[in-house]
Image (cartoon, rainbow, N blue to C red; front, side, top):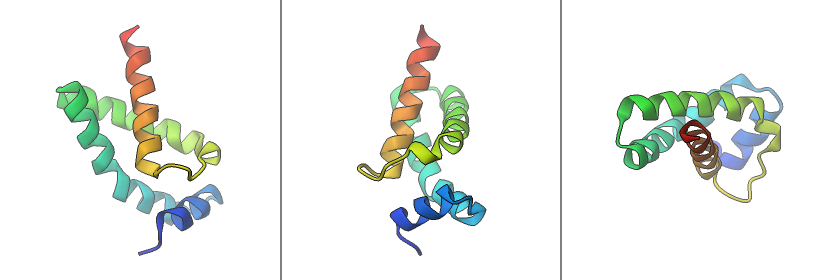
Length: 85
């Protein structure tokens, strides 16, 4: 299995397989974190899906200073905060 940095770099170059692998690995982490934070699996799933869309659109902005899953969770928390306004 390629390392995360390699997957991100390939995904940023429009490699669909790398993008799918990134989310296959990280989506369960994202969803698990959201379910623990929100305590509503349905709302967590909605936010997770919106997070994936935003992450794909903004993938070129990701810099591997933190883990990819951390970046996803940060996006998700910002989405949640905006929904609570």
